[in-house]
Length: 100
Image (cartoon, rainbow, N blue to C red; front, side, top):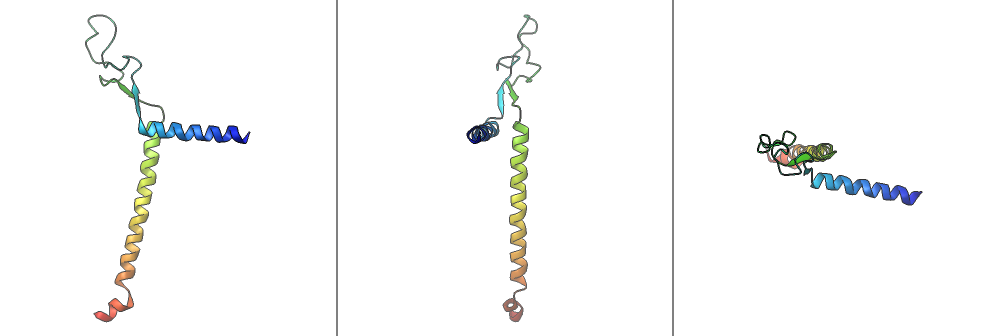
């Protein structure tokens, strides 16, 4: 049972990494060509689903990117807080006050 749980967790981590690395997949409607399939009149226009790019976003890719962005911004805020604290401590250090 433990092995099955670990395998499921490993699969979830690998899937999340692949969604973050490769957020787009070929469009199902046009097959990745970006062109409509069907009658001759409609064939030459761009695909309605992918707008002619041939790609659509994978399920979960927005969530993965937003999560990573949120974690990075929180880490950057914490680094800035540490820098501000060090600067304030450095400015109010007793040796600094004696020099003035």
